[in-house]
Image 1: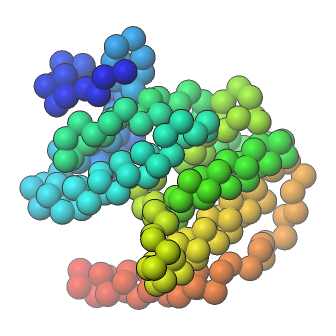
Image 2: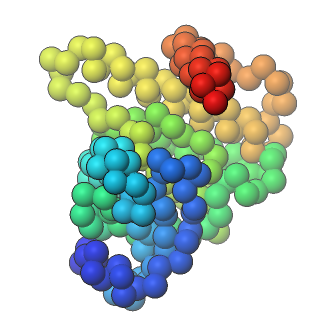
Length: 220
C-alpha cells in the first residue's frame, strides 16, 4: 500500500481516534485509504516549537521501531512516514484491554502477549511504556496486538555498553509492566495488591517523576 502524502490526508476527512492528552502529544486519526483503514499519528496541529522538537524526534523514533518490527504478527503494519511530523500504520480492529472488565480475560491472552513481547525484544526493540491502553484484543484472544511505540528504544551496537545496559533495563520494565497488566485482567489471577517487585531502577524513575510534578506545582 502506498504511503499517503500530506495532500492526500487533506482529502481523506480523517476521524479522530485518540485526542492528544496535552499540547505535546500527537493527534491520532483514522482514515480510509486505498480500500483499507489506516491510523495516522500527526504532530502537525501542535505549535511550531512542539512540532519541530518533540514532534520530529517522536515520529523518527517510532518510525524506526516500526521498521524494525516490520512483518511481525501482532504489530500494526508500518505504511511509512508521511513527512517529518506524521506517519501511518494499518488499523488494528478490536478493543483496548483498558476498556474491558478486570479479571475477565483468559490465560491464553497473556501467554500470547508474553510471546509477542519476546518477539519484539528479539527484533531489538524495547517498548519502555507498555500499558493496558496499548494492548488490542480482537475476536481471538490468542492473537492480541500491541500498538504505540513512541518511547521505544532500539538495541544499540555491542560497543555501546551504557546503551546496552539501558536497553536491558527497558526490557525488564516491559516484562514487569506485562505482569502487572496480567494480574489486573486475567480471570482468576492473584489479587495480591503488592504485585511483583519492580526493577530497582523503576523506583528511581517514579521518584524523579514525583519531584518533577512538585516543581511544576510550585511554579504554577
